[in-house]
Structure formats: structure tokens, C-alpha cells
Amino acid sequence: MIRKILLAASLAAANICMAQKEIVFAVKELPAYHPQGSNIYLAGSFNGWNPADDHYKFIKDKEGHYSLKVLLSAGKYEYKITRGDWDKVETDKSGANLTNRSLEVQDNVTVPLSVTEWADRFPAVKAKSTASKNVQVLDTAFLIPQLKRTRRITVYLPASYATDPKKKYPVLYMQDGQNLFDEATAFSGEWGVDEHLDTQTFKECIVVGIDHGNTKRLTEYNPYNNERFGEGEGKAYVEFLAKTLKPFIDKNFRTLKSREKTFVAGSSMGGLISLYAVMAYPKVFGAAGVFSPAFHVAGEQLLKDIEAEPFKQDIRLFFYAGRMESDNLVTEVTKVADKLRTHDNIRISTLVSDYGKHTEADWRKAFPEFYYWLMR
Image (cartoon, rainbow, N blue to C red; front, side, top):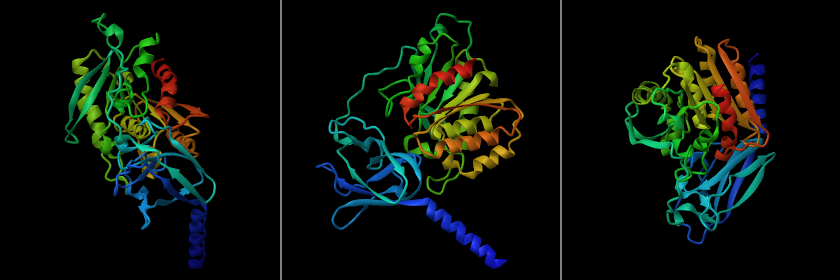
């Protein structure tokens, strides 16, 4: 019996090794003015887009060449090269943002890389704001007492808010507030939430954007501890949404306060924490938009929590995934959605885009369908 167990374990380990492909990223060219001694990293769909992940830091040899060897499962990935922060990401020769690099892993391979320029080599140019007149900054340093730090909060108010003083509105709380309304604050394009809401004639809604915490994003948006990213702060973050931010918004704006009219949404890590918010506070949030969720960061604990959760309230969930993001994303979303469907009180709508990538531009395309689903 022991020999059979050992044999099974050996075969399982062999299958895991066979599934992993050795990818060597080799930097062949750097900018002429590359800062000496600076570290170089990969940030992509394989590591939660962490711009300073030590597991994806290039090694510099004696000749000054940078290379990185990683094991990846077969599939599609997107990534960029950074020097440890998004303000030090690779750019084109004029300093403009680059589209994500893509890689389809099928076998062991060496990937040659050339970096044209770094973003911090160019003077900071204040981009022209694209936010509509209905967007206002509520506070540049709103206190998150649960985490003892502050955050910028932005609010979109429908046009009728100023002309109809008796009308009350549903509220949608969205993560990564920098990327929702304004090209001037967005990292790689905005969702265009304000443009869509300004032009649609279906139903009106207040949208509250909560800026992400930059280097804290991977922990704030993760309710679980992660060996690579650190101790999860997501439980404290969703407590902030439910017990601090929502009461403040309800007190200072004309809102429909019920759970049926209170929603939460986000993408990637923001999608993960938005799903967790309705799980942790189902009496506060009645629906969630879960775009391209980073479920792989949560691991099996998310599935265990879904199985254990009684879900006494009705909850509506909208999942979005793009097939061009990675081979695993649609599978991961389907796995979580199927587990959620075992509960009678959960209603799920899923949108899969055959050509969708992990970008704000793709989430912008999907937002109108999500909003119609949310408000109908």
C-alpha cells in the first residue's frame, strides 16, 4: 500500500512538472540611459500585475545581462516590464504607454526582450481631464480607519441630482477609482463610466470611486493571506466599504439605502474583492460586478468560503472574462460561478468576450451591458 501511495505521489509530481513549461526571459536591449544598479521586473497576468514581485525579478550576470527563468503552465499571458513601480514602466521612445506584451506558452522557450524607454525618463505632463461635470472629488484623503490610511474618493452624481431635490438614487461602489472617470488619473485608459452614464437614458445611479492603494492594492483587495503578496487586508477593506464609506455617503447624499439598491464592482483584484464584499456583507450589498477577477490569488480558500456561506439573502452577480486574458481565466470564473450556483439565492449572469484582454479599454466595452443588467 505504501509503495502504491508513493508511486501515485511520484506520478502526480511528474504530471505537475510536465504541465509547467520553462520560460526564459532574456533582455537583449535596454535604453541608453538605463539607471545602473536598478532592478527589473515582470508584471503580468501570472502574478496579479505586481510591478515589484521578487519572484519575477530579473537576475543580472557578470556581463551585465538581465534574464529571468520562470515556470508557467501552458496558456496565454499578458505582461509588461517595470523597474519596480508603474511610474517606471517601459514605454515607447516618446514616453507613451505601450500595449501589454502577450505570450502564449506551449513549450519551453526563450523570450528575447528589448526595452525602448522608461516612463520616469520623461517629464511629467499633466494630462487634460476627461471627467464630466457630474464627477466631483469628495475627498483627497478620506480616512480608512480599519487600515489607518487615507484614500481619494470620487463621486459621480447624475445630471438630475441638482434639478430634482427630492429624487433618491441607487449607489454603485467601484474599486480602482483612478481608472473610472478621468484619463488624467488613469494608468492605462479609463472605463468611461461617466461618459456612459451621461448619455444613457435607462436609469440613473450614483457611482462612488475608491482609489486603489498603489503598493497596497494587492493586499487591500485580497481577503486572504498570500505567500507571495503578503497578509491579506481585504476583510478590513470591505468593512470600510460597508461600515464607514456607505454610511457617510448615505448621510451626505440622497441615496436609496437598501441592499437591493447598493452595488459594488471592480476588475482583476478589484473583481475579487467586490465578490468578497457581497459575501461578507450580504445585508449591505445586493449585487456585484466581477470583471476579469484574480481568483487565482485567492486560491482554494475562496471556494471553501462559498461552500460554507449560507447566503440567506438574494444576491445578483455579473461575471465578465476575456478569452485573450489567459487560458485559465474563463475556467476559473466558471469554476467559481458553478460553486456559487449551488446556492439557491444566487443569480448569475456571465459575459465572455472571445477577444477580450486585461485592459481598461475592454472593461469599458463591457460596462454598458453590466450597467443595463444591474439596473433593469
